[in-house]
Image 1 (spheres, each protein chain N blue to C red):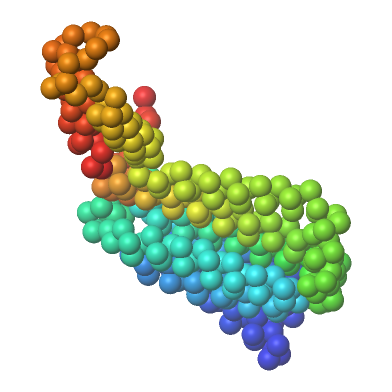
Image 2 (cartoon, helix red, strand yellow):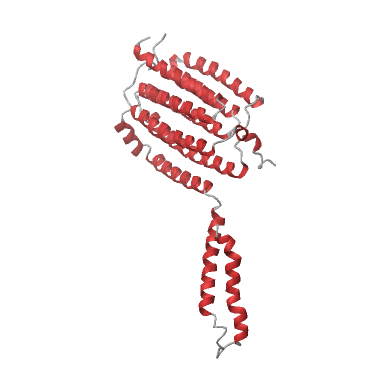
Length: 102
Length: 228
């Protein structure tokens, strides 16, 4: 087996992103979708760190830190939305939430 | 395979396996715990790549803050299976599975055939210390750094606004309660005594009818709002 390089990190990142996308499409409750979105953001971070390692610069890692901040904001607002929707509708099933559909 | 590489493979398999578990587990709490495992494994991958500061941040921010937030919401909502909804197979799910297969094949093929594009593959570069990231954040990335602080502030305000229960109604109710109290107090204070005839102004009988009763009406009408 070849020594671990950037390509191995990229495969891990790609698989994690694919499974995150699978979760977003598969899960029918809003909490599961938000969890899967976190997995996808982490996959992006793995790829950023892999390229930062390959190039020997910290730019990729700085960018990964920004992604973490955005993920934190997304989780806070997303969960607030879930709580707010659950209070009014008594469900977090995304298939039952269709009020905005014309 | 060296022992050093073995650590990478353990973390990689854990991360990918936990990501799959997050995608398919029907229970949100189990999904959150699997996400925790996935995030810790990714932190291990970061540390293996020499990004030690980022690994620490991964554990602190993701595992320490975001997953705790998820677990809080999941356990406080305490959803029943009916409220969660079923995970039955439909078109979107098969689209997702197809996407996974395409990603696996495509990314693997690109990554493993691109040795020419990755000249330093396999060489661990030394960058990744806290000092270097800190100076990069405050020089090259100073503007995004400040914008991210604004984003976090906006997210905090938005989250508070979204979950605050009926904020406008509660404020109006509070104002109406205070106004009713003031009305009652002022009408009681300034209304002439109905038993004492007034020297100047309207006749006493009229005052006795109009003054105190309006104050009583006010408090009665606003009492239901005031008790909220």
